[in-house]
Length: 283
Image (cartoon, rainbow, N blue to C red; front, side, top):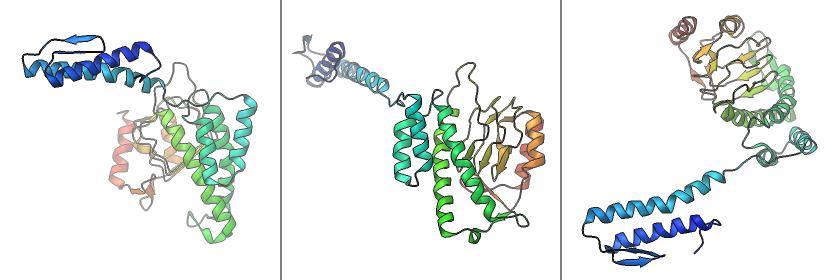
């Protein structure tokens, strides 16, 4: 009756099972080397059952926590080969499978490689958007793209969204002391980045489209030249460095007619002005 490879865990689980069984029959039971006398009250039976459950599940919970999936450790050549394969494939299923097996969960050790892949895909998306963007209307005319180009755009955006979600999960987690975050020239879209920690991050030439930044920390950000935010409600951030705030006010204007974030939510002018006032006040 081995539930674990660890003999100590088996002993603990066995004792727990004995306690639960004894509680059910009211005591007077010997099992797994444990002898429980007759229990004289329901209260004692319940306490014994609870103690038994604790003994049974604590080793199992510990085992589950210790066997959480970890990103594989790859050599530099293996990682580069995976990046090139991911950047060149146009099979969404193959992309997801290879990305998951190579980089998920994204961690501080493999983040640079994930961003390298992201930077390979971003310019492809940018070129396609450039082909169909109409300056006068500030909108895209998809009819200017061929059918093949529209498929390419849809696939590439989905791939970048996949990366964005994975990176966002890491940015919401505690950051090790001294850990630098360099997202420069990265492309991110259609993702829920609520509460991400971008404090002091390098955001030079970052491209963010339809992202949710509510509660995000953009304090102490001084590297942001060329940052582009489209339909991303940056004003919902928890805090923004004064220099970056002014840059966004000058270059990423609020448009009342637009929808924002992956949920395509409308934002009222009143809410926008209140958020700007909060950020300026440092609240």
